[in-house]
Image 1: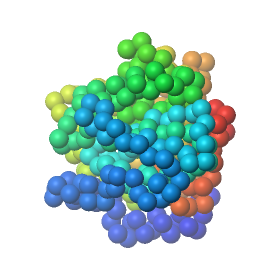
Image 2: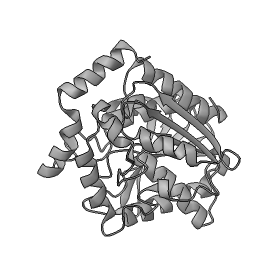
Image 3: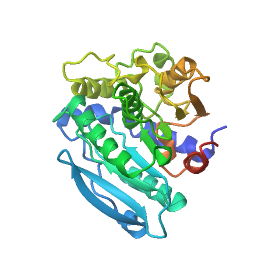
Length: 296
């Protein structure tokens, strides 16, 4: 049962009309109005931060000031493929570094409308290849939230085609798995979701796709192949429209081929694990456990 804090948060989101924000921001060209493209002060307090360019785009590397562990996370942030990092992303990544002493590589990857998915994957694949030269595959983790979750799954599908090693873990947080949002079960959930609006998401997805069909696996990995993938963990809430495709993914995965962990949180909204609710802390502890041990 959802905590009173999470119920109040969902009520607040509905009160301010959060699910209409993306549509409004896209219409005015202010989609990054709430973004924090550079690490916040909190990040520098707990982490050593390095910034470099890959394919002309920034990549931030976060390392613990208290020591460096073996695990290395490639973190792909959400934002409907049109928005950059937010302060919630930086806070979440900092907590992971502090708790596990992992290193995080966080790319400020190409976004629509200036770029399309081809540009994004060119950059992300180049970065992944760089990391493979430095990090053992079993210590490499690919993690993403929202659109970054879809990007993370699609990247691992691309790795199979490119005959490159899979990461030790693939962790998907409230992943956007189908940019067409064509799953009919979405319409049964949309009235319960106080965070995500269909119109804004569809518009963002079409811009990101360019001229490609929306069911291309690099855009909508739910339509891709899962053969060759190894370890996948999914966290999703029941009050977000993206739970429909997360459930679809669960049915499509063959547990004999893929080690699959699926965690569905009752009453939670999109990306709840990034904020400060009782259920957020619980989910983060489970994510930390997967990073450290590979299981819950």
